[in-house]
Length: 171
Image 1 (cartoon, one colour):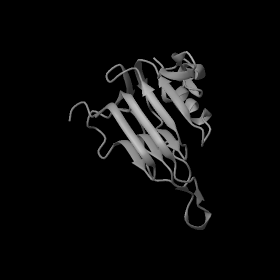
Image 2 (tube, rainbow, N blue to C red):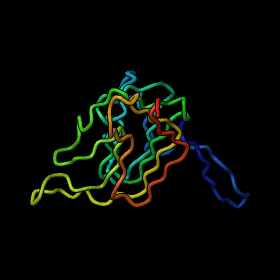
Image 3 (tube, rainbow, N blue to C red):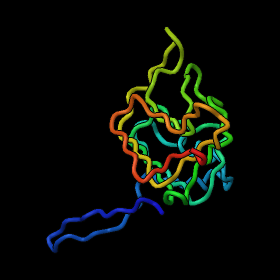
């Protein structure tokens, strides 16, 4: 479910709570029904770099063959339906399969503010702030791939991870 909250309106008569859905809320199903990384990455890409928003990934096992990237975006929440209910299955992911040019990072989920490019042609994406991931699992390979990164995080201020299981099935 979306990250519902309550806003309080003050009036002479007291306080009244109203449920709301965050202003920039994106359910990945808007970008297709496939249980792959494609609708997830499209939802991430749809967010404004500064305003951000909440991305909801419904229950299911999403086969991640091209790694997911959240680069240079602030105020982003990526929320699943719960550990073991929303699974990003990277057991067949190809490392660095769709990394931005000039990067060498490759986790199943990559969250960075970084210089994209090499040497004098770097483009600084800034130092993003306030990124939260919660309520899902990241599953790695069954041991066939050595040195598989499942989560890669760096150059970000205010990173929070809540109720996220990261595992290799046979480890």
